[in-house]
Length: 126
Image 1 (cartoon, rainbow, N blue to C red):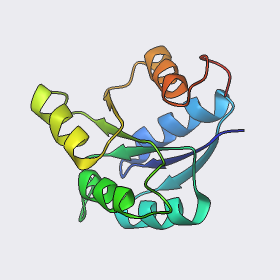
Image 2: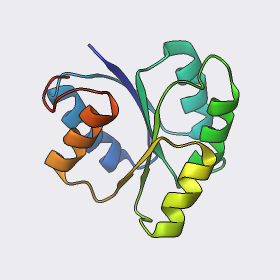
Image 3: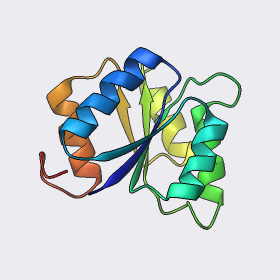
Image 4: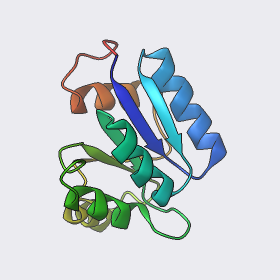
């Protein structure tokens, strides 16, 4: 079973993402802040990290930069989750080290297809 880490401060979005991922067969760890996300990434070594960009305190892009700078976490794909889906936002996420970008609000089927693609799976393989 693939393990994912979701870093999201909005409890409603976190709940939705966790339900979608668990129903698709993924194991899910949750963090409500960038600092907690970094700590869990180091501890659990997930197969993929879904990182909210707009987090209180340290934002998701800074957290991604820190994860990509650490030897033990740099190879973990980080996917930016954000409601700010303009071209410059995508470019900022890529410059920070994000491996992909998923815009909110989430489209359930498209979301799971993208997760599977980032993990190198067929949709529904979780």
